[in-house]
Length: 319
Image 1 (spheres, rainbow, N blue to C red):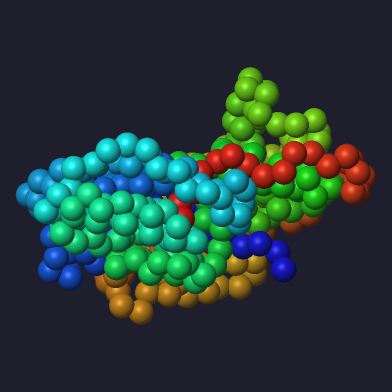
Image 2: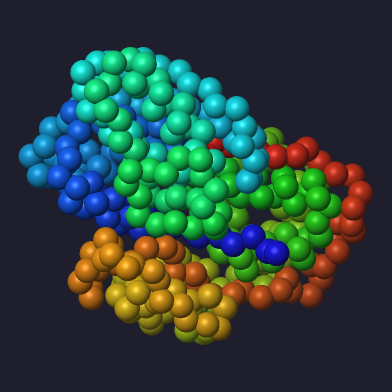
């Protein structure tokens, strides 16, 4: 079965953070201190601090650096560094996603061992296989979530994984473009970073070159949810204004509709945590539509099954 992705913008991540804040406040509980798990929880923690401050709640915060994940869908060992002072306090522990749950479990035990009176956990997303169910979360999903703060390391991880599996450029194009919705500009940005830093092995670099060539042969044409072709420069504009495809995507969000392929799917929000009003944004990324197979000439540039590159990614993910 092909992997499913949810690709979020910073605006959508902030909206999900606001939905999380609403859940926390509706419970009637207030933390004495907020603790974020770094790196994934940094943006969520800062957003919650903003929302609390707007209400007049001035809770201090700590950030605990945690490293995990050796590759996509693979849990690595949890390493914690940093000190926190939480004795006698009610703590809100924040991360972006409860995936395997290891980070939340380990850090929660650390906080309790440091004398915290209580620890409640909060994440944007929950994976169904997580060993820890957060006290507060917005959405349950089994998709691979591409958060905006880890876009390029995720692209690197996908390319390395495909290279290690002996994938063709055609297969890589389908994974990154049709399923993960990586835009030509994002791939070009990543290529610039990878070339400067030398982060890819030889086979991964060959896949990347093939992808850039395939994008070029396609004329950098993207498909909008409505199905009309536009250049990647148009497609990268703010979905809230500008060309018709932006207005169509914004209308989809207001109606709580997510387009997948040729079908329309109502986004789940049974308890109304994502706003309640018809004009409020809904969870998840509105996919820009299927981008199709790789153009002619991109197929089988690598052949198959030989010369596997290095496995996995060193990027960290929420757990």
